[in-house]
Image 1 (cartoon, rainbow, N blue to C red):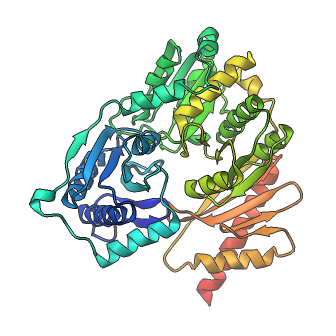
Image 2 (image 1 turned 30 degrees about the vertical axis):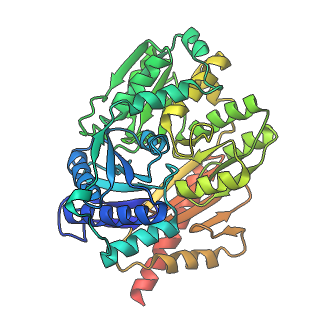
Image 3 (image 1 turned 135 degrees about the vertical axis):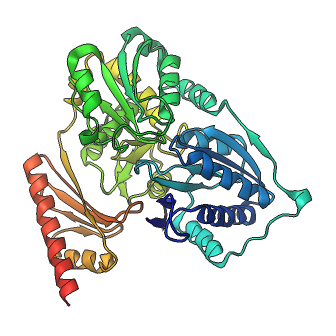
Length: 466
């Protein structure tokens, strides 16, 4: 059982003891704290909610809605929806905020409350701390019976989201139609099974084969769209019947692509390819990704005459840096694309539309498009944490060991080498230390990661012995 309170919201496993997992009591407490904070912060009295298809989603959603109504807040419920759709609906409804009920890429036993501000963006770390303080003190006041909030449902939110994507100047529906793509979709049996086929139909893609698109929340494989979890769709595409494979995570804010040869396009290269298209069409511009993302984005940005900046991991940090640098596109190397012309949030749907336009105009295969970009390899690893591990001490010890190298400590520890880097940090969403390393060589990246993992284990064992 686990309950994690972080910049990414309130996340935990379903079942168990209150305070140790995401139980109904915890859902009510944190929903009440957030609703109280929102009313005081904005003076508004409406909140948009939506959930992915995992089995606990409906239960948690009803608890959230009833709690908010109990505070005198009107609830606009999108039902089965996507994270970016909820984000966009907050501004459309001029609501005070939003709660997305999803544990994103976590396994089925997890769920979470992702908290939005009145701009449809994730609340900041400081704002999150305020919400947690209200929850800890249970300093919320519920409404009298005549002042309870109202409850309404919207069934057209995904449709409106898609309409706004199609209206973007850089989305060329006619070019996509002319290519007559045949596309395979893996939506891990969540809400992408609703949204992605609907989007492809609107883009004029008539040949779509759906795998795991029944929104029943029964994930057929690990829902994080990493290459090792996508063997089924890769095998299907390797038979030569498809131009592209599209994979999304349960809440549709991450996009992974499979080339026509059955090989993963590379989750890091989803953002790289879409950014390259946007930069080309705009005659350059600035970009942002997080510290754990590939340097390939910097390469294509500089090539197009723009400036690249790195942000701390976390969507809110990337968005802040994008606003600061006036970036025209950004995101995270996990397949998260943020296109401000639509909204400031990771959005797999707009990523699909922009990528298909790019591929259509490129005129050749997805595999050939991938070959036009710098070829880096990222080794992604993790170490499970136990209560006796002092992560901050471990990271500081590693920083000291590599003090002769350029080190960035704005988010964990990122160590730069001549042509490589390694980034280690405590996860916001799981009880683990993530260790990412990048090189032009797979062997070098993995060797570097293994060396750092060995160092970490040595530090941990030494501290335990002490």
